[in-house]
Image (cartoon, rainbow, N blue to C red; front, side, top):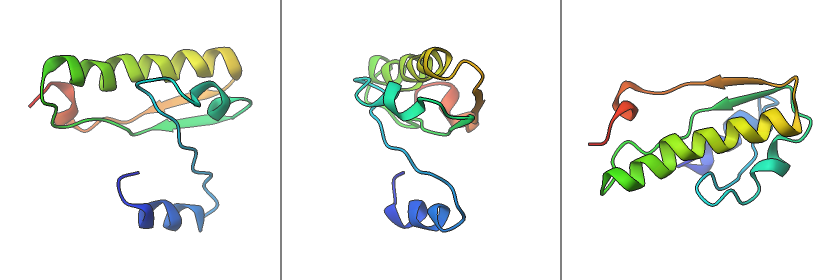
Length: 89
């Protein structure tokens, strides 16, 4: 979440907010252990180069998906991406 106020609003609606680092993988497996569904909305829309864009948007998403498959095999993966996230700008 870029703005903590957004997270507080979601938590007020009963949504569990879990923070992990998709690039390094820190906390990703633990974050998805036993969950029913992951709503993945994280993305870099402006990256200084193609490598940064790929590490976050492609590799990070794959890392999250694989962690879910391992830690919660019956979990669902809901992936939302704004069209600007399809390629580096």
